[in-house]
Length: 425
Image (cartoon, rainbow, N blue to C red; front, side, top):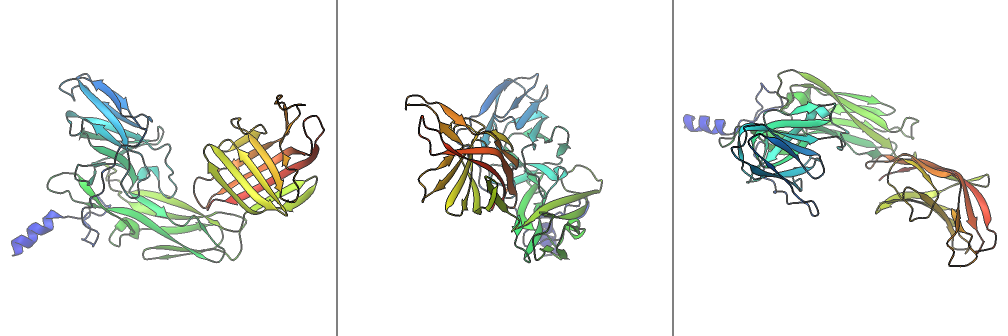
């Protein structure tokens, strides 16, 4: 009986993120099968023939590359990369299927993924790791992932092909915004690395959980706050209490310092990393229009995107104010027709007044002459939000709106300036 218990203990050894320390078993200490990603519609596989002299091939988006050294293949082989859906919870990176699946190399090949386009809020490049998924659905962790902070890539060596992606082994999560006087909970999410199992020398990724009691790295957490409000660390995270009114510094930033030997780094060196999470205090939005020197507050300010365009709208007394920008980014946009690229147009609409004010005016004397004059000035987007809790911020400067004219007649005009700061919800 004692021998059977001993053998069972060896089947599943659950590791903490400390390389040289074992973690006691928890309810989460089980291998987790996940769905196999299917090819992404509209993304074609890239194929290249690589022979015994080696070579390289990159995905259609250029984010993943495979470098095959000389002598890794015994004969010329068609190597393919197909973009697939990422089925690993907590991973925001792209995923790829490397073909021919099951190919075994005589020398390790290098698999490299760019993280330049990833949103690393709440984590750190040093915490990025590559992982591969086998045919049964298990995600495995190769022995070492190497980070290049200059090229912004993470890479590893492998002697086989399968499905690959990148993930953060620790991430600080919290709501992106909170109301004045309310509380936001901050958690550190991580995976439970299990194994190695008998069939594979690499560890398998278990559950993706919020704060593991048995992880010495998480128990080392030191919490700090930059901005108004208070923080209260507790066993499984930290609570941020927002001030009773919107502070001048908004958003505030909560940070956590973690110390330890993070799994998959390939080094026994203890690291100290600081993870940051901005939290916006709702209520600091503003939207103001100045027409011919008279300022008016715009209510119910919202923005959204459709296709390749950004739309900003709000109510001003009995009128509706609309901005359309044929781009989704920061920058300066002159006034042109809606069909023009990287341009803006404005309309001021009233149900009581049939004459709409527009940032363009047709001057031709008949309908077959599409001549227009356009407003001077521009719309400037200074901040473009990447996720909820961040703000869209910008101004309209030096604009002239036209109305009342028809073809050959002269229009009425108003001078317009505006500023806006709208929360992405």
